[in-house]
Length: 272
Length: 175
Image (cartoon, rainbow over all chains, first blue to last red; front, side, top):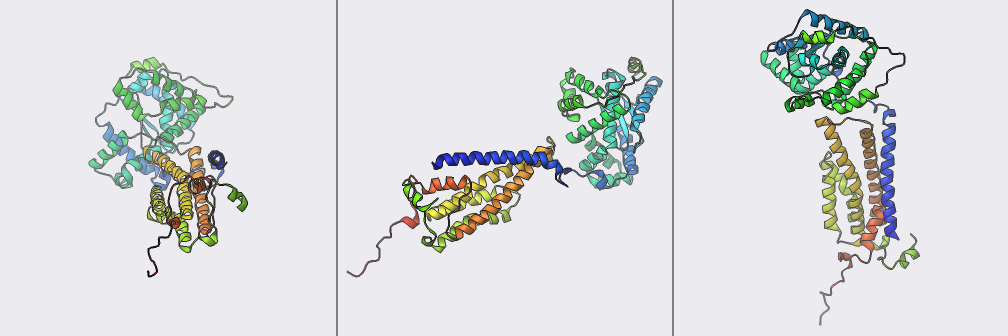
């Protein structure tokens, strides 16, 4: 008699656990002060101003671009300007002065440097099927900038001391160390999805189809990249699949109309 | 359970009543529950120390008497689920904190709150049980109370308790 009641008690306990967990999961967002708990500090609390971030960005960018070939020609520059202007239309108000740099590289990637500097690899332009796809990736990178992920990540990687020394000038060793830490580390998953959302909203306001980012990821997943390239891509852009999924779930507001970017994309590709 | 019902269950040993339990036994039974406070003070973030302490306490004290055996077993068993929850929380938090492979999502927050609640309940019930044990009373937790009763008071239990051993007649009157 007791034995069966022990079993019943066990199930009661398990059920209580499951129910309590479920209830707490549902109400977690409604508990004041608990809904936005995050482990990571934001740069607001670190107190780095936009001006100082731009100063750090310029320093690092200068060093990073030192051994890179910057690609620049009239076709490319005017094409990028069209995309830039369209995105700025949607951005309305920016904390930063966004700048694009195109560098020669085999990696399908774009990198966001502190202070609104977006470095675009030539392979990214070659890989993009349309200017809209390219704009989607750039919008995502602008998201990292505007949401201050870049400086957050730097603060986490190299520490405040290094950042402060960079603001005040910084010597070559410190800058090298900062670049090394910056390049070898990826954004966190939550930062990536925040930037994805920001990018899609920006695209929508800029009258570019937000699903373009999904198309880009889909092709990236299906593409036959070499093992090394693929590995590098996975490290710098983790969780492609889940991001593809969330981009498919993105709800476009009613009344949205897309305006195609008036660009001859193949001509721009050919100009590289 | 009423007393006459108890007596009918012949497969179980009779429960000791408060006036039959010596002071010393009551204190040891209470100690089983209070053990964890000492353990918590030693190493708060490691949810394994209290478990080790409870296991040691259990094996040292269980042979003293059936009453002590019951309470220390109940104390030991009842901290297993809380300990498991704490391990889970530690593992989950470390994954978020160090490896960033998981997000601090609603499931995690719900689990965190559940674990906090479980720890509070465990604490409250342990204090109540400690007080009851000190008064020489039985106190049954959900599940673990019955389980401990089954293990300790069932006649199939083969442990010989110090309190049960027959007094030896070593001292004898002059021949």
